[in-house]
Length: 64
Image 1 (cartoon, rainbow, N blue to C red):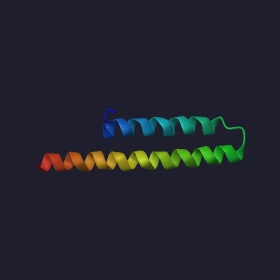
Image 2 (image 1 turned 30 degrees about the vertical axis):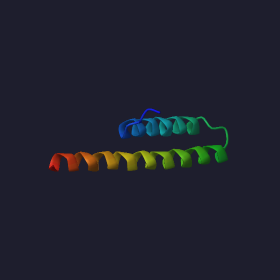
Image 3 (image 1 turned 180 degrees about the vertical axis):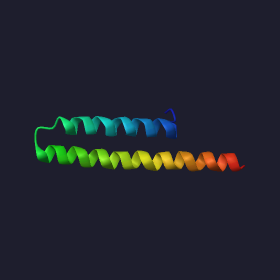
């Protein structure tokens, strides 16, 4: 199995969040819209955590 880089994970999660936001804007019901908006926010939070990890590792590498 091929390894997936942290940046690839960040990019994929960001793309998924964008897709969920797009679906929410086209949602037919308030319940569906709320579910998609919440999911997008959650996935975007995960992407943010991965991004912070990437940046922290970059800082540690520069300090070495």
